[in-house]
Image (tube, rainbow, N blue to C red):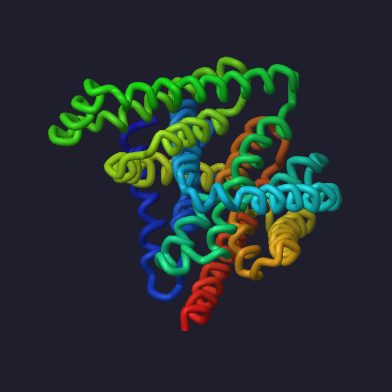
Length: 382
């Protein structure tokens, strides 16, 4: 690993904003970042070696930070969302119930891991869907459909994130469960400590000094919690996905300050998360996708079944189709499955490329759901 390679990866990450800025296309950031990695990695020119230890470690840091950001997106302090939890819980149960047979069906064209495939079909991404909802404006965001969508997507996101280490476990499941439990308990302990400290006058004074003098104290604490939980997770053989997500949820539950959100955008979205997606793209071999009929069917099957399952559940809950389309969005969980699955050799190159391609389709489907929900909100107001 050299500064030249680091500069190359960082510059490659600019492909995300460049493509996203094209008028009328609405291309998500992640598309450009993964595409740049594909061009520079194994599929393209081979300039980035994703197996080089330092590159691999930076990718892990970026992944942990991605899940950290996903956790902070959960609106845990929103009273309307909490009131919608019974409907959201029913929706999550129904999605999982439909996803399991879908997972077994997909084993005919994919890996013989039905529960991994079921998680891919069932998952939703708050990190994708919530910004789409927020972009529709406060009026639409306050509608019952948007409130239920927020609660349902957030809860499904949590459940599927927690399921990933279990469905991907290749060793002793008991050890994986113990590690995940310890990380979650540590997260609860950190939450209680932070909540108690924030009520003290001394901490209030120090945080005010941090704000005025640019110490970025909240960011330092947040990253310290993230990396400490990641260290605990790796020590017990569980995924850093759990560590990153738990750290983000802890900060969301304690009340993430606005300046911390801005700092996270700088550190995470400006460097570490694009770095992860560029390196993820460099790992992929898209030639294996287009030369394998089974991989192409896996791609189409995941994208289609994920959309159908979420739309059906939305209709059963008597919600608009747009809510189901929004719930189809996926990002963190499939990224984790591909990253971990390639490392553990649970997935081959074609299957990994198929999953990432399906992710891009679900993001486009969620964007279409946002458009439909915005139009519906405009019609209701009119």
